[in-house]
Image 1: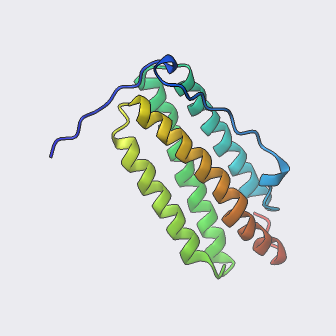
Image 2: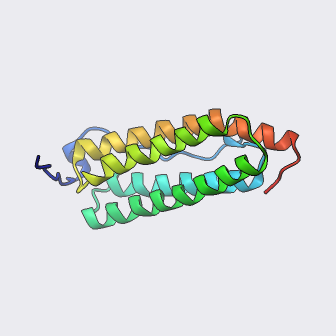
Length: 152
């Protein structure tokens, strides 16, 4: 089965322009390390969004996406280590969310050579997943770590 690679066109080829996600205290988990990572993840998402909105070339967009994915791997590894070290009871479910996210981004990213609709889909997916995961699962983890006095 052959997969066609798509190329990204300038934003005028599609209607959606993606806004940056601004950090707010609503995203705070209560753990300084996790919050710093989340700030960096949102900054990388915003760079990706700007590159797509500006119709940057495939090489630029791929580079920004790769930076975002690389940092996500780093962050997930740090977060998962915290969960293991603190005997976090929801670790298996939380890790599964991480693994599923990475697999989905990799699946889309592998075809992101880059397509307008695919780029828009990925932006929408990333925005919803990052904000939803931080506001839900990660804030829950933050409260657990805070109760246990774990700060790193």
